[in-house]
Amino acid sequence: MPPAAEVAAIRDLTVTAGGVRCVDGVTLTVAPGERWGVVGPSGAGKSLTAAAVAGLLPPGTCAGGSVRIADRELVGAPEAARAGVRGRGVALVAQDAATALHPLLSVGRQLAMPLRRHQGLDRAAARTRVAEALAAVDLPAELARARPSQLSGGQRQRVVLAAALACRPRLLVADEPTAALDGPVARSLLDHLDRALAASGTALLLVTHDLGVLAAVCEQVVVLADGRVVEAGPVRGVLAAPEHAVTRELVEAARLSVPEVRA
Ligand SMILES: Nc1ncnc2c1ncn2[C@@H]1O[C@H](COP(=O)(O)OP(=O)(O)OP(=O)(O)O)[C@@H](O)[C@H]1O
Figure 1 (tube, rainbow, N blue to C red):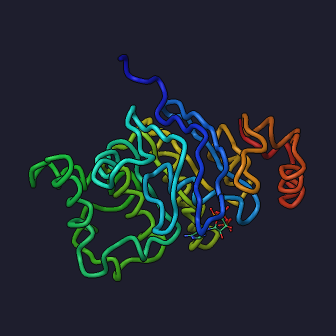
Figure 2: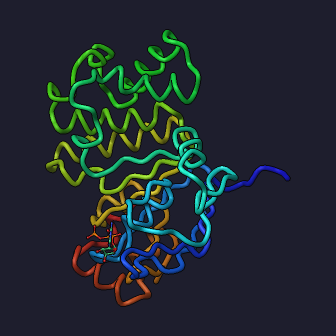
């Protein structure tokens, strides 16, 4: 069978938690290098969708349907198989970097571990890759010796981004990656994300509540409400002429003016 042209094929995805269907039939295809935003009201199922696509659903939840990343099925696959897809296939950047990093291990060690364990890089190759990954988010190679507690919140979140990109995934899933950061630091992280993705050709699935961020970073958007896709398409078109009431409310709330929307 020839390899799939898409990076991610999500078909009729469901996520059930406590007997409630929180994600209900989400279908989405992500092409190589494509950048998708996921927006919607609170509780719409954005984070659970992102977690399912990254193969990292929280305990107590159950996925149905299909999520294929780089031709490998994640739904129903054992953790060992899903772990095999993470890294090279898909990587997740969550909201809070502080919880994603081990407080006692140096930044370099944490970035190098998955490269050595899952990608079989030797010590020297891993060190080079770590320096490259840090440089991609504008952090000096010396920072590899620091512990997370010695870094600012913005630097920590850039380290998490570097860790995700170091494995050279085909798809980066980022769930509100700037939620814990203030304005200028958040802006800077998004600039680094933008540049690093452009350089690597990695596709993006970005959960955000901020339509300004969506317009600045993504080309395509999917709008969720009550776990379902209510609208999807190019960001510019959807924001300029929203078809669904939920999208109209989001646009109105953001008071987004069309000229600000980037193609
Ligand atoms: N681990 C869980 N166990 C039980 N229910 C959950 C769990 N995670 C999420 N939910 C429920 O699933 C629904 C969707 O949650 P999700 O976090 O995906 O929404 P969201 O769109 O990301 O919301 P927000 O914008 O507020 O973060 C919500 O009703 C939420 O309470």
